[in-house]
Amino acid sequence: MHRGTTPDDLLLNKFVKILEDHKRYKEAELLDATAIAGEFAVGFDLAMLACKKYDIVPPTHLVHEIMDSPWFEKDSYASDICREFVKRDESSITS
Image (cartoon, rainbow, N blue to C red):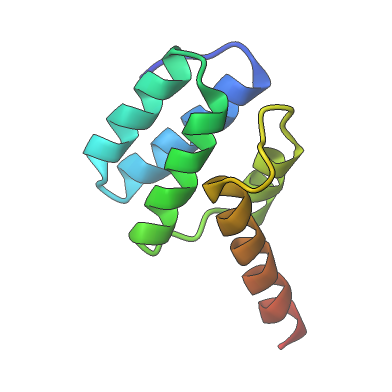
């Protein structure tokens, strides 16, 4: 696994670990390669698309970290899916 040195490297590495924990090795490998290449916006899209596809609910604080990143692109797949996760989390708190 790639050991990044920037906050965005570290954030994507957390999602690599989440995907590996859910036995999604191919997606984890692709995400790791994306992080190594420094393609953080693409990495956020890949991470969120994989989580949604495989019904993986990432920790809310990690979703917020993605949304706070300077590489986070509004109107991207990651943006749409992050908002879904945050909305889901907020509704579970009020239930």
